[in-house]
Image 1 (spheres, one colour):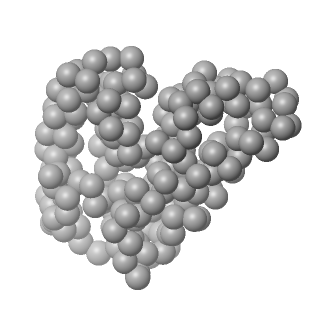
Image 2: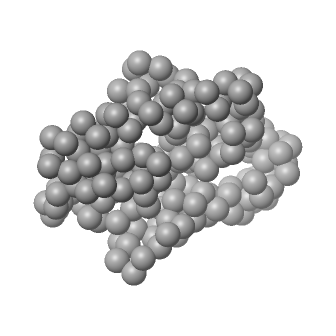
Length: 198
């Protein structure tokens, strides 16, 4: 990830105490990191995308800086950023679906559900609902999926954020993907289509 590990953590701590200079230094670092995350989501841009990376960054940035959070670390920031971006994407998908009825679901890779296009709003909502159910059954697996997909973290970074071994991340990642594939296939089957995981 872009900024050195300790730099964001130190600046977050200083901002919490009201240090305006730290705030000025932190803003571009956070913005650049959010831009990188947004580019990850919208990496397969097509001309028909209605939500661009810049809009996703701006919405997430406003929501992040507007929260009164005692930032514990850089990892804590990215964990919250992943949740915020997920919420922005899902809220956008729900609004688009409400405005215009989506077509039938079709088979797509699980990763593609994160590249937002209006016609995929149903898949993104289904993924969000499946993650909510997974979180009730196994919160750690749900967090791993959120960090890997929505924050774009590597296995090693995910292990660091959660304070677990990379072996545990890999095992839970594999099980969560299989569970989500099963859940999304059931949902899509009910809607005369299929959403799959790769």
